[in-house]
Length: 187
Picture 1 (tube, rainbow, N blue to C red):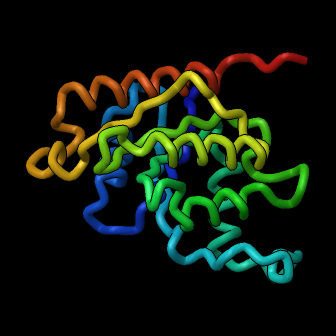
Picture 2 (picture 1 turned 90 degrees about the horizontal axis):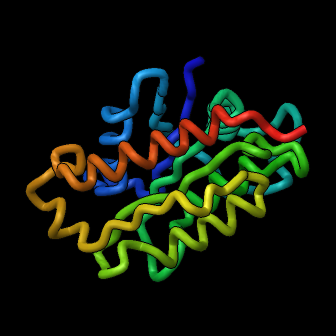
């Protein structure tokens, strides 16, 4: 059985280190696991219940929901903006939480990882993201954590896929998320 993992990146910057982490994860995914890097978070309007009605949902939000529905699990890559989660990632979580009680991430395993310039690697943002996605219905895997500090210097000359320590950590994250996604659910 192949496991499909949807990767969302909370930074829109072309040279984002979190995007590079996501790209590395796509490359490092073990056999039997397909990691899809979602493109298009920038195109999704801010969540508004007035436009979240059948027949009026923006195409970009529909695309996100369909990608999440098709996934067995999600991995969210987030930097830290002013001590918290980036708006683009929070907006994606808001769209995925609806319709209430039947959102696209309901019960799906979710891991939150990332890198930031600070000495703690974005821990505050990661904690806030876990909280938000958990409230939205995702099954947050609390013991899968990876917060890489000093992104600007650590990845100045090296892509995360070429950093042996980071590649090993990302491989472990994906292997554990894959295992969680294939665990039988309790009846």
